[in-house]
Amino acid sequence: MSEIRSESIDIKGQKVVLVSVKGGEDAIGTFTMGASPHGGMGAVSRLLFVGNEPILNITCPNNANKKADKTVAICPGFRGYDQKLYDVMSVCFTRLNQGESLVSGMKDIFNLLQDGVYTVYTADYYPTNGNGSFFWGGYNVRHEIKGSAEHNAAIGDENLYKPCFLMPTQSLDYYTAKALNAAEKDVKSRLIQGIVYHVSGFHSALLKGFHGAVACVKNNIPYKCAVIEKICDPYTDRIAEVRPVVKPQAPKSGDEGADDRQPEQETASQPQVIPVSEQEGITGFRSPSVKIPIELFPKDMLKVLLGSLSEYKPPHFNIISAKLEASGRKKAVSNNVLPLDVLEKAEQMPDASMVESAYAVPSLSDEELNCLLAGDVEHNGRVIISPNFYASIVTACNFLQFTDMKRFIDFSIAIMDNPELSATHEYVAQRVSLQEKNTKLYNFFKTVRESRDEKYEKILSAAYTFTTRYEKATAKK
Image 1 (cartoon, rainbow, N blue to C red):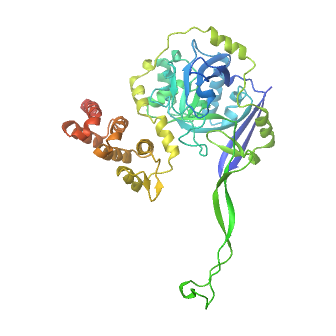
Image 2 (cartoon, helix red, strand yellow):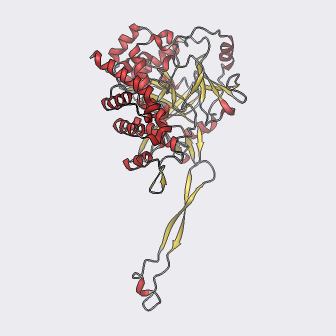
Image 3 (cartoon, rainbow, N blue to C red):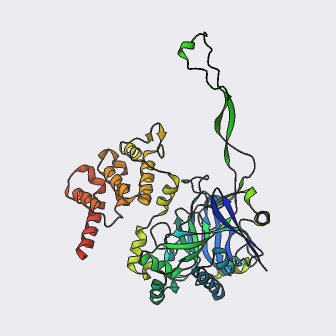
């Protein structure tokens, strides 16, 4: 019998809900299989499973380097998992939308997890794979998934972030137009649209809410999910060493130089911050969205955390492994069965690069953007983003597109109109041309199309594509 405990703690004014699982059923989780035939020498294979079914095969390159993005694909032959597990998730989903708390509403799902300590919260998700493809059929072909590394190099180990992209735990064979029609009515009144289990980096596996995800995108409704995120990574804080520094006394009257000095100054010791150093030992444990100092963990939860591995093979490992090896490759169902407008809207959603930049860059002032437009990577003696100019432009575009569309359009046009920044023209044009209905951008690209100026050479193709699409869309109205 599993033992589920929950606790709400306060971390610098932020409420964090913790759930510990002891003696769980090991029906949902991930584990490492061993060496992978994909990904080259040193690649490690990791599986996401539900019940006895292997669902996602995750290839971790470079000996499972946590800073490397993963290659992900649906396991061959996967058609679905046990109906009993599906029913448990459906019941929990109903409870959440009847107003029950996360802990109470998802208690039956907690029983299905591997042993460990989890944090639960709600967050908005983009129903894509993080690269412009709707998630449900976005993993049929094995490919590298941007933003799937456990430790994101762009964000850094010090910063927290919330996962926001999806992986499927259900075959696209289950999609039906009839179920979508029903979901379109339901999503308008739901408190929670989906339940997800965090897997790696920015990506979580959707356990419940597949047709709702399609309906939310189709009807421009935010896709709010209840998130289950395992806490298992130890971390060590970097601290600043403080030492007292005594100021010299001001000279007394009659001393040499007294006439040039101010009256006697305060002579008390003043603290001075010395360069950052790393303290010894572990400060606490973390997941992507939260860092919890050891002293804030309830003792019983800390025992569970220390007594359980971050990943381990479930008791029915041999059954899962046998199914993986015996499964034949069936024809993959593509995203093309979904409504075209849903696929088009998925392409316009923020991608992993944009989200990385939003977390990596605290802010960008107009003065800093003007420095970048002038070809300078520094402002007031400080590096704005990166010493590399091209990387700075890419990150700035991603950040602005995610946070401020008007500034993004203005910044992009200013770049493309400057021949001295031609090295960045092609990337910026490709990025900004994904916006479909911006009149200011249309007027600029129309000028580019009609101009014979050589400075527009690298963006001419994007200009034709954008203006043609814009004119067709406005003609339909």
